[in-house]
Picture 1 (cartoon, rainbow, N blue to C red):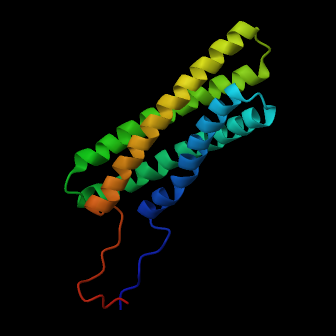
Picture 2 (picture 1 turned 90 degrees about the vertical axis):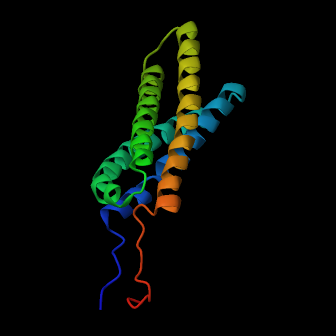
Picture 3 (picture 1 turned 180 degrees about the vertical axis):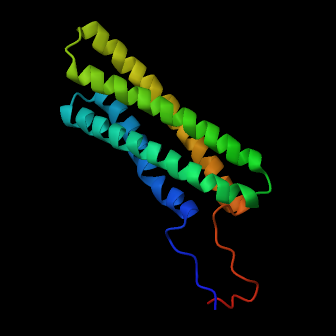
Amino acid sequence: METLPSIWRTEVLHALSVHLPLTSLILATLFFLTALVVKKSWISKASGALLIIGTIGAWISMLTGDAADGIVSRSLCDPTVLKAHENFATITTILFTVASVIYILSSFIDWSLRLKIVFKVIISLLLITGTAFLMYVGHLGASLVYQQGAGTYQPSEDCSEY
């Protein structure tokens, strides 16, 4: 009797690791934009914490995605979707990384008010662009899983392993 696949399969680890950065980065964007209007320091600090957590999570997702690539790519009908998913995920991660670095620098260095405003505009643009890319990356990932069965377990026709 064949055993069911483990939750620790490489391709499953990627699916598990993408949800924290996905949520964190979208919330970071919403909090950051809210903090521009509502002058509450806790919202700005929460945005920064979510941005840093989400960016670290995005890099972990990139690593687990690279590890899953070799396993998943062999079973896909259209591997170009996987390549687009990888490319846009890389761009997305870089956008949020740059936003994180600028956020950290602007938080710890005493810049002039004009420069702080410029940094806030740049961070806002990076977060909005990154969120748009993030949604597209998620769409491509969902397409891989739900249309092509990437990383999913396919039971035998008679389900005898159950």
